[in-house]
Length: 517
Image 1 (cartoon, rainbow, N blue to C red):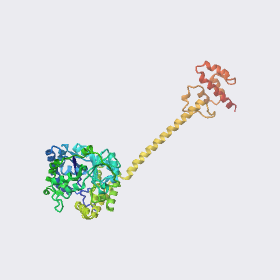
Image 2 (cartoon, rainbow, N blue to C red):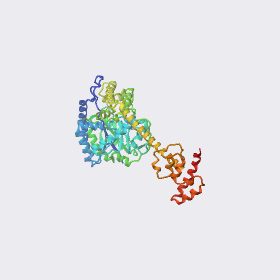
Image 3 (cartoon, helix red, strand yellow):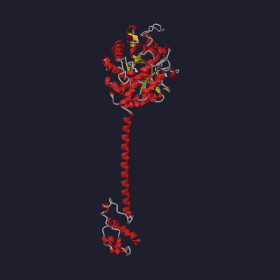
């Protein structure tokens, strides 16, 4: 038995207006709504909506044996809700079949996993809440922006509670190994890894309608035969592609919809089934650990992050953006929060690529700008204005003022505690002096402990007068001064507390030398 996992991603990018220096400070709305509306409606009508209907028909026709997974960014869902609300309705209908699984990812389809772990975690949480709100599912399998992955990202993803992630089949990582197995992470061994089969995925999304391709035309039975002819032990085929490959990159006239629709029939003839990622993770066991010390992705020939970070323009733009991440997260302004998400979209940096040959042609095909330098200049102008807004509404001084107020409160509390500590220490010393009788004769009595000692007759009377003669009549024991300690010892047992008065008899004996002085 062999399993196929179909994955489709949607991350509709934003078109930034040509934002020049004279706009800064005057117009804080950065997006070309007309272009966004036109692009997303065109793609939805040509691809998303008919593809949704096709998948729904396939699920019904095959007795729910055909299954598929979607990865849709939060910002793409926002645009679809705004411009094509009927797409959300059709996606809900697909979700209700139980044959569609939604993957987790960053809300803004961003590069935050490489620069800002706190932002990364916040976006994943926000995205999953959006998916649950719209489709009633809590994602269990994670896919990062552009399938970017390394050992550090694996540790963060596992710490968030995910049991599996999907990433690319980079040759410099796999070496001789096949992507058609379930692996696990070297840094988080309990995190299972599903690897995209790049060749079989690109045969559909990029080469399907190319008449110069050696395998053209591609039919469903031919494609399934390729999968069936793989070594028997290779039981997992992950097909990951952009959703707009169905109807947009590969136009309807190419027969792409008929091709996809025929796949389940030919797959059933070879006992090839369609599973969701969660089913694969629960039924298959990892064959080996996969160590990825440096980030890899599914883009360009190198399968690394150079598509977004390959030159100084891209690096400077990303560094500048995430330098204000901590301050933006402290903001409560909705517009600033929204702009922050939109400016993180990875496509902005993709357009700044200066690559050549086949990679360069792909970048220029998707870019709305004349050159990478135009893309960089426009983005930095927008980012500069955004940073100015953050500074104006949430200046650093506000944070310092709040911090200083907190520190002042702490200092006041420390002083109060120190004052109480001194008072407690003073009272403790007074109690010790009372029990030992070690009071200086010429010292004035301490006012606070006096009322506490009124019950004890010797203690209050001794400090009240400096003359010992006055104390003895008050105690009514004139014969107890000069005679030996035997007489007071005989009188004291007659009283109620003989044990307490014996030490009291010793106290006047200690004070007689003081009177002689």
